[in-house]
Length: 265
Length: 372
Image (cartoon, rainbow over all chains, first blue to last red; front, side, top):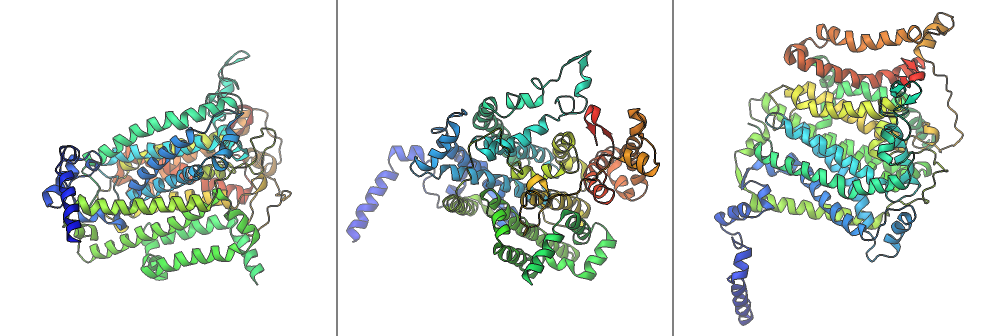
């Protein structure tokens, strides 16, 4: 027994002292106080955090963990989303069948479930995160601007969810997007059904028509069709994730630069 | 007996009844000034934010859903896959509302006794991120992953019939997080409910830190130190956002008619449409005349009302009810604040006008799609 332990210890020592291991894990297993500080300072992901925190800042009843969970769910959505993209073709002809196949034909076919419920969950966690930030007055100086960034992230979250809603190309999808896009058609001056649109005309020639208004720009057509599906797909998979990531970088950076998580002064 | 209870619930969940109840009781639950605070104390409403209050609220909500689930109509609407998250949301919102208000009241009591808030007590001790924060985050991630996996395995994502542009479902609903906006469509035209209001909501949210110049209440839960801010937020978040989403999700059926939670979604339910515009009310019903053919003459009362609302009201409020607010905020902050406030109030006002006077539009110029 002890011989085995010795053997194990020897192998472990050999690995941990090898050049490769030391090159990857600079600080070793964080046992001492110094090592525990270094592991946060040296790691790229842990470096999102400071090394030391006041104790109230880690209490779940203070933070609710909702900001972190929003980010985590976003990562889950990115990973499941990439997997779904392998199987999904954004055309009127294939989209619906591909969605059915994701459950019926693909091994472990709950990726779409995780993705859809994750999307709902992210909207909820983002709302609750804002609720917590409001209730602790954490938007007060010096964090005003970061709250505004957060509002943009909220809008982007809902837009991501909204664009994803169309992709299954079922009745639920196109009619929900129809309801949404009809509102775009009522934009003042920029939509054909909006106030002031028919004032933008020279004689009988209207500038804002059903093929040149806000709704058309959103759908790539006069109604929810092929153009809208492609537009929403590109926005959902590339456009909006790109934008939201940039705002997330700024958001996290500002959390640190504004003095970390809020607390009583 | 059970049927009678269901009947009563069906009746009072109607927005025309439930919304006023919520709006009025909100004043006492989140008292903005000393007058409401006194009544809150006298009625013991603050006890909602104790441990027992929390248990009461959560079990009340739970009991309601347990009671309802035996009803086929209720079960049908609640167990729709896309509606399940909103049921969860209701529980979460009540729980976190309680959690934040409890800590706020506890801190207020501490401050009143001359002690610092609990967070300041905790903050005296410094801890290392590794391992004290990292393991909490790790546990949260695992719990969240477990939740998502179980949810994904237990409940299939909805997929309906293939898209068919010629068959529109009745009702057609937007995704659930936009149902508050869709609910506003009952009272406002799309250009307001779908474009102007969302924009104002976004700008208003972003403007919060710049309007609220109260230095107290940063970094700890409190109600006493920022009564005004918290109670206004609660109205927007609980009454206007969560409540309207719930109405849109659970209680709006075919033709966007209202259906109680235990009511069958009858396609042929008729609701009397006797709405009139303000101009028709004034000229045809009160003055017993024909509508003037000149648009501006016809709609001048509406324009006058809107002008008074956005032009005169801010000044009046600054002189009366919001005197202290005006003093604290200064003219610029106050102007932004009061305009946002009036936008917010316009929704309940329009609801009331609709329910009491059957008013459809205050200004109605369908010739230019300009209806308010």
